Length: 84
Ligand SMILES: [Zn+2]
Image (tube, rainbow, N blue to C red; front, side, top):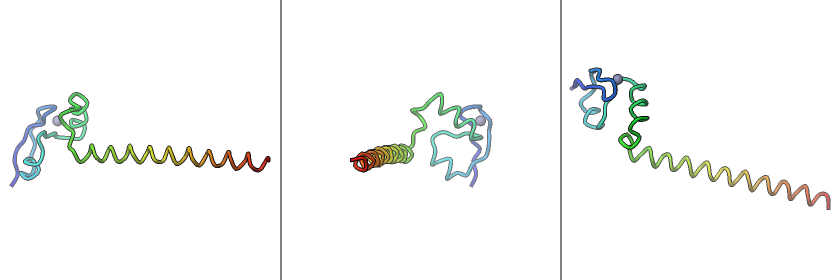
């Protein structure tokens, strides 16, 4: 079954699947409205899955940074050892 919902950003009415409407608190007619709305209300559109995903990405970026730093350090030490 499909339901008519109103875009939470621009007010446009559009059709969405009922299951999808029940799943989401806010509805947007297009991606642009979603991004604009999220820009103005960053706290309202924060599903827990994506925040943990973001944490994973952050942790991964930190790990990579640490790895790069360690590799650079060993490379420098290697050069220093060659000189000696
Ligand atoms: Zn819209």
